[in-house]
Image 1 (spheres, one colour):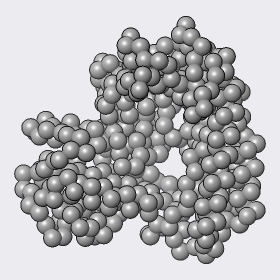
Image 2 (tube, one colour; image 1 turned 30 degrees about the vertical axis):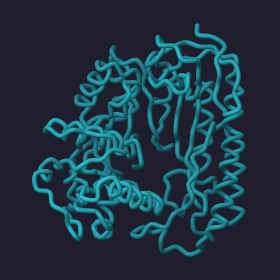
Image 3 (cartoon, one colour; image 1 turned 90 degrees about the horizontal axis):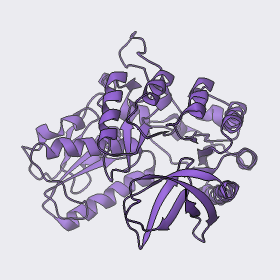
Image 4 (tube, one colour; image 1 turned 90 degrees about the vertical axis):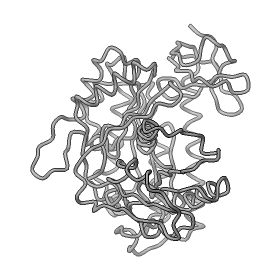
Length: 428
């Protein structure tokens, strides 16, 4: 559940467990043990966890259910008392999960094996290998930022990084397996290089890591996941603009277009910095796609604040929005703030920005018609079609061709179908 980092860790944990002689099955099948890697970003994520537990118990009422991940760390007592949960593992204990699998018995209340988040000062490498098309490679974990609405520092601890040597080793292993695209992921990826041990200096910068990855011959394509605007410096932009491996696609969270709300959120930038970052990207890479995250309904967000966000996003050249409705999180500063926004207003603002996102995406897609791009096609035949993404993150489809799956193809973009998916004129 949740972010791409959870996906990478889930994949690596699954591999570790299978190496102990267990057989992995689809979550929709009957199993003896269900392991759920949880998310705590929103209240809805926690509700979704309860639904997943219920689905597992319907498959096998005697199944042993283990909760790991952010919700399990932040609200371990609450998770333990959810009907059906037998074991709750904290952020460090989840990586020792095979030690627990030998002693399983159903419990009336889940057993908790937590950890003190302040003591987590190590990095465990992980990467996902699923359909052999793309892999998510974890290079960083934790966060030292203290955004007033966020529980991630409580769930994952301080910012810490994998060694450059290990990242390069994992990247080469992924490329050797036949995967064509590697997506670099972390909690605060631009903070790469930090270690969680007091007074120990960073080993490398994120820019130095990107430089090293760009030189790995085996890698075909590299993509950066979400990165904070204040950490996306010009050196990184220039490297990506010149690179033949890194793609012109950025996901840069904004959260609000109001400086007043950004201050209350304790973000580390204002709107002018964000605007300049978008303009720099577009000047270096005019065809680049830029996605962003926005939160609506933050405490104290007036209509004027919201309209500032709406008009700001409408004016700058972002390509799509991920819109989140503010969700109260206990143990955060925002939970205690005055000016709570009624949920119906949060919902209306969410819809308004989702509609704007569709307009922005359509405009960006229209601007790309007639251009030549490189597409990584996926492996699955979906009702006679193959789907994929261009380097600048446009979703495309073509009639199924058995020679095309999991391949990079140069194409000319033709038109957009009724579902908002790009069709191609021809493969070049």
